Length: 152
Image 1 (tube, rainbow, N blue to C red):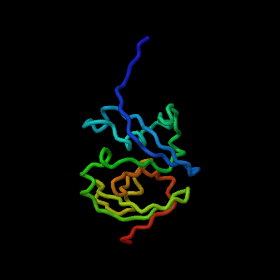
Image 2 (cartoon, rainbow, N blue to C red):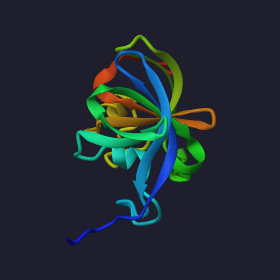
Image 3 (cartoon, rainbow, N blue to C red):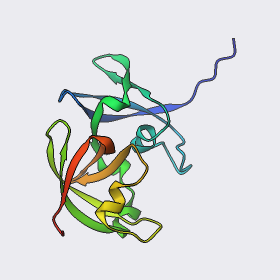
Image 4 (tube, rainbow, N blue to C red):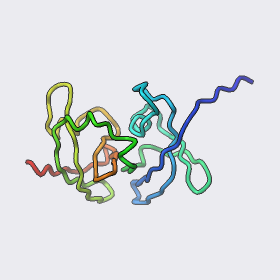
C-alpha cells in the first residue's frame, strides 16, 4: 500500500456553531499553504472546497461540517498579515444567526479599489477575516444577518 503523509501542524482555535455551542481545540494546517510562504492559514482551510475538516478536541479527532460554523477565533499573531493594515479600516458591529453581536475591525483593500465594507462583505469567500484586539475572528458570510459600520 502506498501511503502519502502530508506534514501538518496544528493551531488552537475556538469554534462557535449555529446552535451557539462553542468548542476549543486544534485545526490541522499543512506546512505549506497556498501562499507558499509558510504554513497554511486557518482562513485557507475555512475557504477551501472541502465541506468537512478534521478538528482535534478532548483527545479525539472529529470531522466538522463547515456550514454549521458561525465563527472561528484564533490568535492574530500567526494569522494576521501586516499587509492587511494597508487597507481602509472599518469599525463594525455584526449580528450573526446565533444572535452574537461582536465589535470588530475589517481592513478593506480590494484589487478593484472598492474599499467599502459592502465590497468586503460581498467577496466570494465562505469565511471573512475580522480583527478583535489581539485575535482574528473568521465569520461565515452566510451566517451574518446585519452589519453596522461606525463610519456610515
